[in-house]
Length: 267
Image (cartoon, rainbow, N blue to C red):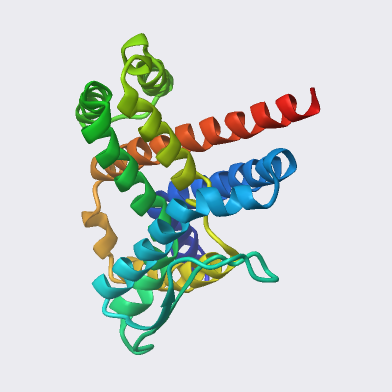
């Protein structure tokens, strides 16, 4: 019994190492998204949701769809954009899968969180096209951080300092003089307004998370998880965090912009 409890705890830790940051950021983005949309609705009216949704929702749903196909799921219905229904749903992807396939079950987790990484990919691609100097700065940060092998106070401070530098670079004088920067900013706000996960996304992801936990538990029973080196887990988390930070930065910008409109409206 004691061994079983130890295996359970070990598996929980490993599952958290692999998925914890994505789950944490997913909830953070959800909170920022909810407050941002509330602020936009208060200041600009309900149509503001459709303005941001015109770009953000199709990217959100296409991310689900692409991930579903990658994990062998069958898409049964897809709606890239619609007027918000009674539950506020502006788009959806319905898909089916073989419940006997571990691969397809694990896929539920990645399908559920796909809009986060789909949104990030679009913003990074847009950064490359519209503000290439900022893109190069981001890639330099990514390349430096990928070589980190230990997590301590100095590492955390270094990461924070590098991303603070990225924010300063985004809002540099040179970018404000670049007309494409404003296109980038508008589209990024649209994407960030709809990058977070819905309740349906979270429910779907939880099915995949259970499958991931089960696989890790089996690996631990047979002692195979020892081949997952701690250094590689650190590098993996640094890499994942580096991309997730982009989503957090632009979701924070979106929230601040929405707050600005609320203040202007009140005055």
